[in-house]
Length: 492
Image (cartoon, rainbow, N blue to C red; front, side, top):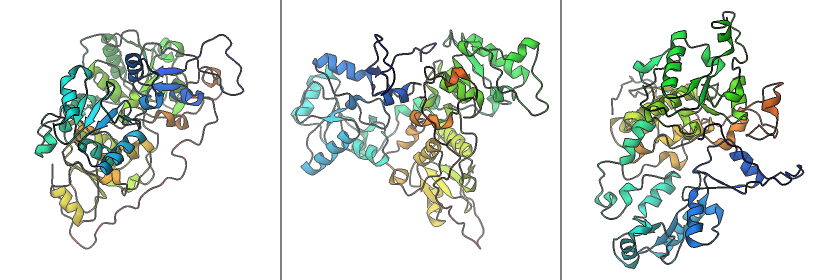
């Protein structure tokens, strides 16, 4: 997230002219894949690894294999080196095979590069090694963590499974620290912070956006009042940023849009723009900013940035990146209620549901098609079973949004509920698939800058059909029971 995104040279693809004496990147060090050039790195065969790859290689003096330090979120055990003790041979073999398949490594004996020891009791030589070498930072944990993570195909919080005295063995959990972090990271504006199409941003205490120039998408700009635009500029100025002035301001006011036709773009100087605030994955501004490698985020992302007073990649959270311009086909028939998700996590899920095009209901009746719950208990859950309402966890909502499809509820990841109440703290962990964004970006016609291959960070290959234009997979809605009076069930 550096100001004025740095460029690096990639190896030429087959048949491309050589770069001559220019040195090309062989590795990119990144905590994740949320940067514009990621897809180009994949095509060029450049390794995208986390900083752990550097640290471990330096510590050991060996060249570690890059695939075990992948920055992809799908490689959920990336960077982990696991040793196992006190487990039956068959269970041990299954666990280690799963670790290897999802980006991790294992060791038969304790070595300095081991990161996690899996055990059922705080006994034995391997546990003693962990206690005697605290400087190595090895984490002893129960195998239950791997079971829950594999059943969800998503890492669960590790805190309840760590020795000494893991709460999992006591069968209860009073608090998860990641719940506190979610209250800020998932914060969405409430009704009292909303003003037209913009949000009243909190007053920053530090200039955390110093040097950045922020532009507003043309379609969004014309939905703002003059006062909202001025207040937005004031807050950005207090954070150290500059709000780019649209072309029409040079003429002393807003351009006339009374005939319903908006100009293609009012952004005058793309070279100076670092950030584009945009609501939808459509239009000239979105396409051009994406191809030029600008930071593209929503007002929700900007609001969260002001709350935390730091910038993050918008693609790390589903609501922080522009939403597709049309709802998911079939979602208009879905009526969804929520249970056992609370606070910022609940509000985040409600936003996702409405953005998908489904209807959210606080109370549940026989008209509901889905119940999204963090725990298989409670009055809503009991009623859902009686009324043949589909019961899923939040991953179903997030994956539908991530893929922009109405996914079947029969996938085991969507109907699994961990033994401990950890799902609420996991809301928002699903990210935008950076490698799939190309399908949403259409090159602006006649735009030589956006179409030139040296500036198009998403790649210059032929684009597939834009997502949302073809047929989608979808599950049939659950039929309501007929002939009986509908009764609401209230649940937390």
